[in-house]
Amino acid sequence: MGLSGLDIALLSPEIAMVVFALVVIFSGLKWPNSSISVYTFLLATAVSICLSVFLWLRVESNGPEMFMNDSLIADHYAIFFKCLILTAIALIILVSKSSFTEFNQRAEFVGLAMLSSVGLMLLPSAADLITIFVAIELASLPIVVLAAFSTHEGKSGESGLKFLVLSAISSALLLYGFAFFYGASGTLQVLSLDSSNPTISEMLVSLDNDIPFGSIPILIATILSVSGLGFKLSIVPFQMWTPDVYEGAPTTVGAMLSVASKAAGFALLLRVLYTVLNHEMISDDWSLLLAILAAITMSIGNLVAIVQKDLKRLLAYSAIAQAGYVLVGVASFADFGGKQISYELGPESVLFYLTGYAAMNVAAFSVVILTVYRNQTSEIKSLEGLGASSPLLAGVLSVSLLALVGVPPTVGFMGKFFIFNAAVNANLSWLAIIGVINSAISAYYYLNIIKIMYLRSPSISGGNWRIALSSSLVLVITAGATLILGILPQPLLDLVGEASLSII
Image: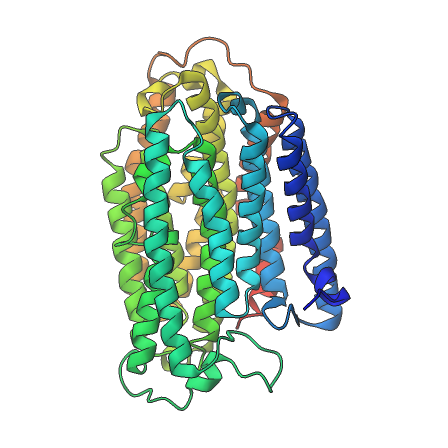
């Protein structure tokens, strides 16, 4: 079946990115190491974001629309995440431009990153199980190649292989879970605006919901599906690949996995929980299970991060802990005692935190990308004296680390406040307390990095730092956003509130 005019219009951001990706890849055959590929990616991002803004306005006028034979949906929720993912990846690629000299095929690297971003963009829009699976694979397979892209670094090939094997396992679990959903409901449809095309949740209403966690088929399907997504999101006990891949892969790839991939994964998780296991079917048991996973994930992430000596491994465990914080908001979806407010605060807090997390984590990874490229090591001690040798890098990293702790007036503080507030309103006060304790634990290893930068004499970080204008721009934008969104959170709150209405 061919694409209709409506399909092309609603799929235009992804189509634009695919077209530009092909241009980058084919142009790389003649100019493999040209900076044109980076600027083409930035142009593609600008075009896709502009098209996404037009779609936002269209949805405001016409409401959500299904397209591609009801396999995709255009609503504010999906469009919000498209823009967030595109912005994050564009900033990461821009700050990495100077470090791309370590790759023999710069155009291939950028082209694969663009194709991966298309898969990430499709995930929040996916409306049936097949589309979800295809989008996940489209996002993951290019990352496998990118993780092994540093041919001169032995650990890069190892990280690519580990990511490939564990991605295959997670995909198998996910597909098996989807098979159970289909077997129990007889449909693949997750979302539908047409009453004649029933969704999984509508078909499951007839099943016995008195058993804890729903019926046995739903129990098996959800456990398998959440396990598959757990690998992608680095949720304990599926996080074992994260530190090795982050350490061995190019730092740019680690940044993409930490920010863009995590945002798309949680967008999908929220969508599935609020549709397949919709409001009427959600029990306190499901929320409790996710709350326990959240507590374990952030605790293990923070405790293991304390003993890390490598900066990229530390950020990997930090990403695991941050996934636990986001999972607190996801766990707050249950309607305990008819408290509708908890059902609404959960997704709003998750969207706000993911946006703030994107800003502060891109800022942190930007500094790491630049320092690792210059020092040719990712050991934490390589940052000694950075405050004296490069005040800009040290200042930006300090702001981002304080935000990750949750210190006011950064966006990290506001994000954690909204996340923990959602948990309290969902009668999960114990989880909010564990979250606060974990934030205090994380302060140890985050502040230790700041101490090393400012209170230790310069070592290999000494000498003059020459930071490219493009990299400086990214540093200023991300650090500025980290502070501004913490001081003036209301515009972002209004935006995420409107986006979250699409799934509530």
